[in-house]
Image 1: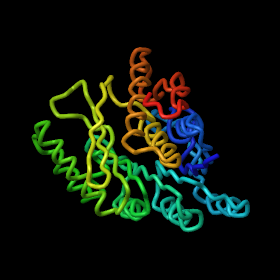
Image 2: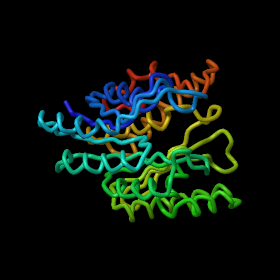
Image 3: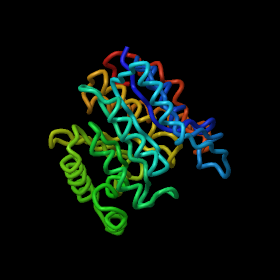
Length: 289
């Protein structure tokens, strides 16, 4: 069975990070091997939470995996809350990445034109180093702009008045530039709100200078963990050898149903989406669920 080392935090409530990644990757017939970077009572979108930082334990964790001769087929990194954690992941890649190991980096730093509260310029620089080691990057548009030019480039983009056509042209240029700079196999810019299309959102896939738009119906606002669920589908598809565009279509269909159900049930955005019902569909070999 293929194995993916999944390196991010574990939140008891909120259906994000490891609690999103493990069931999705497992449902796709791949073993998820978690390395927790922190343990939280609930994700940080809630008004309060308990956090136990595991950064200082990561070296010992890696040492035990080395003793076991662990060789992952894939490595997937998500939320990393500090420069030190990024440095640990770079070390992890030096020790565990072998020929053929597929690396997916979800460079969590901000969304909707704003950086997250843990963001620093130093973290962004370290994240760029990590992104240069990836096969596939899955930034949202905010993070893509940070990877290209920092906060100033990100802010200036959101100050523009764009038409749908102009927005898509610019996003395609951003994706192609990211792929060139970071020398990766593919870039997926996720969760794009299409100008003038309030009921639609899209993801852009860029591979070998080709681009493909994958649109979905938009239900309500943002929900906890949707980016983690998306990247988990992509990472499992990568190690199975699936076509990247096909994997994105599968992830979008999976999420569209999950978000729809969460909206219909009146689920609080911090509680995440109702994805469990659709896990069985991810198992269907070759299905675009």
